[in-house]
Length: 142
Image (cartoon, rainbow, N blue to C red):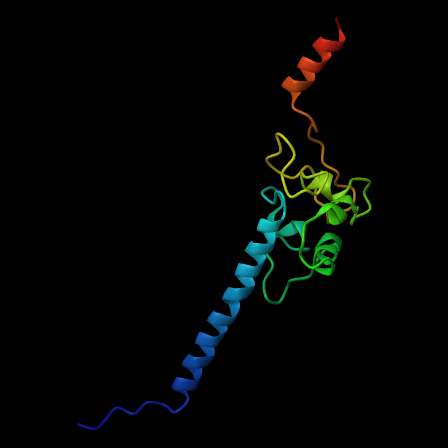
């Protein structure tokens, strides 16, 4: 029986597939790393920075907050928190649950109150814990 011959382009094709797979990993890690830099990103996820909820290599357009975050060196701090990237009247810090930008979530914050990259989305949730508000009201009624 004769020898089985391999097509000369098989190693090249395998190499290209491997390079594409390895090339896509750092981008995914960078995105997850960037999301971890924000005080919270559970509600809007990728949409905090991107125009798409599921960015792909062909569709990674940033929204206005994503552009500001990138221009700011991908650093969350008081300066970026004080900005109002989307111009909706709420600072980035309020929308992302860290009003002063110290890197710590504000008390009782579990998700974003609004999307810092979408105009007219200041959020509609309470900014203070209802049980705390009730306790404060009782103090002032005396």
